[in-house]
Amino acid sequence: MNTFKSFETQLYKVNDKSFEDIALSVFRFQAANNPVYGSYISNLRLNVDKIHTVSDIPFLPISFFKTKAIKTGEWASETIFGSSGTTGSATSAHHVADLQFYLRHAVRCFEYFFGSIRDYHFLALLPSYLERTNSSLVAMIDHFIKQSESAHSGFYLHDTEKLLWDLQQLKTGKKKVILWGVSFALLDLAEKQRPDLGHCIVFETGGMKGRRREITRDELHESLRDGLNARHIYSEYGMTEMLSQCYSKGEAQFYCPPWVRVIGRDTSDPFQKGLQNQTCGINVVDLANWHSISFIETEDIGKSFENGTFEVLGRLDNSEIRGCNLMVE
Image 1 (cartoon, one colour):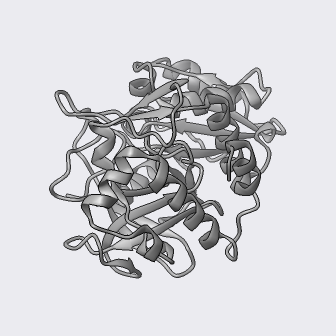
Image 2: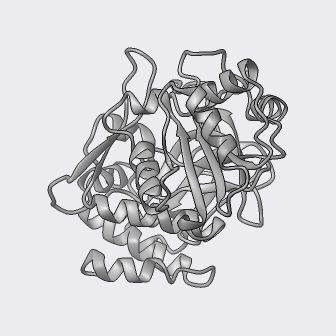
């Protein structure tokens, strides 16, 4: 694993049998070449040579992205993705070595679950994200729009009238239609317009960000199904600090691509890991984060299941609210 190009080849060959060996290889590489992670391991007084399973790997708290440049090796940042946040709160910065890899990889994640990008029109209602300059979500959706090769794909900042007109025109086409929206904008659409979007695949990407009271994902999806006449509401689990995305298929559980794994941890003891079928903190292994850190202790709470799926229930009580997450009341 001397170069990223050779690792990228390995990445897309990962399966259940090879995941552990590749993850351990990435761990040792990052422990030796990531100063922040190496210092964290040292402060924990852990011996890297005695770590032999993924569950034993120390996960870096996601808060480090707010104060440190998390880099494995020495390289110039091609771009820096930034998280959303409430006014005055600290936000995360993810230094990215290769923007084109991120874009290619986002397509891989989507197509793993939903098939070719070119089978879809992508209509995006992401006002709060478009108002920022460093959103990984906007970069991803913009790439999807271009790769879809559809003249009907595009962003709609606040022009919901044009959005609804275009959605109606696409009812009888051969391509499938995806409406990808931030939660508060989709709720506004559902409550004020109540359109019939039964022919669309609706993706919500979270995000109340002070625009509305925070509600549970179940409440959100129920309101959107009713107000948009949508049979299912799909979701994407991604974050500034990850290069991969996980997806739901219209129900509560998220599915991971082969190069991502979610590991539950005890909410009061972060070093007790491997919890399943119970409320827990969410740790993420994202092997695509080769240049930064692949082992992230998030501030989300949820449930991890034996079949590799997981649910997101909210945020830990002692963490800040971030714009891209829903809170449990």
